[in-house]
Image (cartoon, rainbow, N blue to C red; front, side):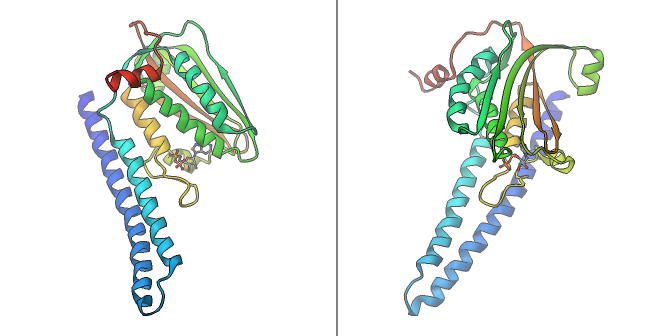
Length: 259
Ligand code: ADP
């Protein structure tokens, strides 16, 4: 039953994806056709470089969109294995430090003795990067980004409330001191192509990707947000008894490419 429900959810999100692509591509094609017709009309005189530039811009945006979409839909390279989330967080720490800029302070707090989780390390990096990029965008004048990990025990009451199984989990939190999200944004945030960012700056795929990765790994992701105070993403991933091999995501990439 669970497998069938997952299948249904996947079909539903694929349907949303298809609708979103059709919508965005339709707009981009309208721009391309429009400016192309200007050039055709102008053909007696000199071709307009500005019109050609508009065509190139719309085509580039279309190409970016397909790349993001492929990254979202691609699932064949996923290699879940027992891993220590502290290792993943520590690996990403330096990269985030560099890309966040000086106006954002980054704090990473890992709790020792974390149980392993079953997931693909590259995918969890993707989750962290997507959440960090959104946090950065929500703090244009600076602020603090805090990432922390901890083991948590989900009891019967908590399990019922969160629609989870009772048991051991690992919690990953990503908090910012940014603008916060109004209720109507929180409600739609995980939908593919939902964005409040200006055209050309947001794809609306960041949180949909996070949601897909975490639910596929058997976890949950929730948003707590207060306007003007900030936003916290709380992820719970089920713990596994299997021992994590302390390998870095880079090593995984090498394994996959056959080295
Ligand atoms: P994108 O970043 O391309 O807009 P996402 O799916 O990553 O797409 O995010 C969807 C929307 O959720 C964003 O446009 C933004 O309005 C909101 N959002 C996401 N993360 C945050 C955050 N940390 N603080 C405030 N708003 C956020």
